[in-house]
Structures are given as C-alpha cells and as structure tokens.
Length: 163
Image (cartoon, rainbow, N blue to C red; front, top):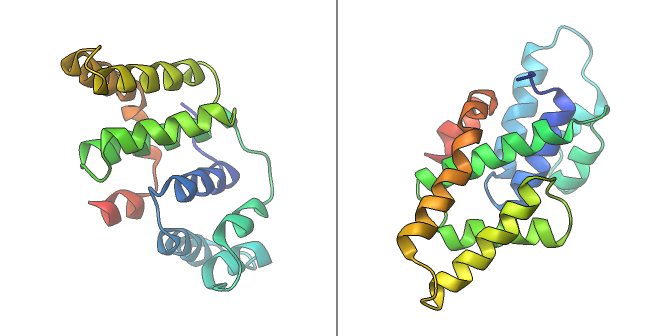
C-alpha cells in the first residue's frame, strides 16, 4: 500500500466533504498541521485551506497541485465510510445512497462501481421483503473489510474528531 500524497488527501477530503463524512474544520486542521510541519514557505493554496472562510473548501481542495491516484483516494474514502458505519455515524441506507450516487455519476472506480449498484439493489429488495436483512447486513459489512487496512492512512484528527 502506497502512502497517500498531499493531492490524494486533498481529493479524499473533497469526496469526504461531499459525502458528509468530514467537516470543514477537519480540512483546516489538516492544512494547519502541514503548515506547522513544513520547513518551507507556505504556498497560497495551503494557506487558503487553513484560513479562507469565504471560498468553499471543495473549490480550494481542487487547487492543490499534483495528480491524485484514484485507487488510493477511493480506498481512503471507502475506509472512512466503513469507520462511519462501525461508529454508527450514518445509517446503512445513507451509506448505500452515497455509494449509489457515486456509481450513477460514474465517480466510483471499478470494481467498486458494480458493488455499489449491487448493494443498492439488495437494499431496495430487502426493504420490499424480497431479500434477507441478515444477508444484506453480511454483504454490506463484508464490502468494507478490504478497506480496514487503509484506516491507518486516514488523517488521525479525522478519526478522532468523528468518534
């Protein structure tokens, strides 16, 4: 597993913010931490993430230079959704709907794309009484197991701030 780059983390935060699994204050804390740990002059994009209140954090995150690795970003996002599930910060339905929206918008990469659709279908069938709730819960929980190892790469204040 490769260490996430600054751009990977910026893209993670953009998606996490969109999904409601992080708050702007976490992005500011991430930027503040990078400023404190840096031995070089602070770039404008980093300073703006730390102190700018008028511009949306989503727009500011898009200005972070570099290229992100799509799989690294999504592994982080899906690991964070798994944490949100275990901590009961969101219902399974909310998580399924977020995954489904990303699938419909073609944002989530393969192979997660197919799983997101399948999970949405099985959730809807469960609600109609046509699919076992126990089987849905097992499938849902199993989906997040491969992402647990990526939790170690999540920003620590992200995990601590949400518990």
